[in-house]
Image (cartoon, rainbow, N blue to C red; front, side, top):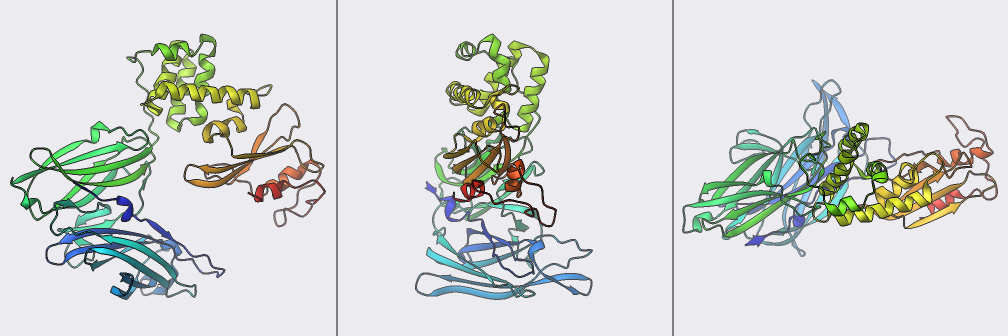
Length: 483
């Protein structure tokens, strides 16, 4: 069985260049996939998606059109083995409506390691060219029983061989993003299976499976087996319905099987799904775990159900609020257990106990006269993102309200994120979130001015710093930037 590392080819590069010019800054996405054809051998497909809003257009008859220069070359470390340079015009844009456009280039390459060099220029702009270099590994698919890279389509439709996107009777416009919001319910998948005619049997099987990468569990409803006649090249086009797939990170796997169910080859496509479905938890027939029951006293059930809100998804929050309205302690207890069975199916009870300790910690640290700890901004951030790496606390300042700056070295895939909390009421431990550079959190570019309102007036919309006093002790901005 050959398991090709998807990371070698699923390279979704976002190319961007910062410039001081007033013209649009060209943006493009890049991906590469490897395939094989008996008539040309092993080859690589290079996909481009150009952000339409980043291209500079000129008026032509019938509308607007962009003009790009594309230069590609592939080197083996010592010499150039393939190259191309061409001019690419965007589709004609009408009525000021512009849409992203695509391009595809193929190079036949012998098995080996290469560097793909890319240079993209907007002909209608004086900005410097975008440049990038991508490592490429070409495997020998000419003899092995194997599966190609998985190509996902933005659009797929019957086409003719004159299109650069034509393959196996279909025009496939590639999808380069691996993120699927709620609005997208179908993943059109294209792959090729090679050299199954080497098998003794005349048929082979293909297994489709979907793995939740957070839990490692297989999502059983996506498991599909299909039977195929053997061939030197077998094209497969599938539509995977993800309409009811919840938010999460998943791996879509395709495994080639012999008649005896021996695994011959496998290939994987990793994607992220955002889909906060309003599906109620099924708790009526759920058996209460005695451990869960003993860990929550009757007088704290409502408290701990409410404490799940900081880490719950929007649809889950709706379920929690609906249950709280019922004022049924048995239902509340069941929903706490159901939440953790869904959130951490392999270690639900241990995960709950760890979270319970965190809830108790933020209660001691951040609660006030009218808010539980988990209801406060600091408590919510602590429960959602964990303990900060460093905390700067300033309860007294001659020019600023009391404040705290929390810094996180890592939050998921993000690095060096910060949160600024302040207490404008000066009492009751009621620190509020004032600003953060974390995606999805409150952003307030004028937070230093707000923090200094204790003894300064506001500026105006043209100059918010007009009356900002740089007094001794007012150093919150320095603390924020030093990380």
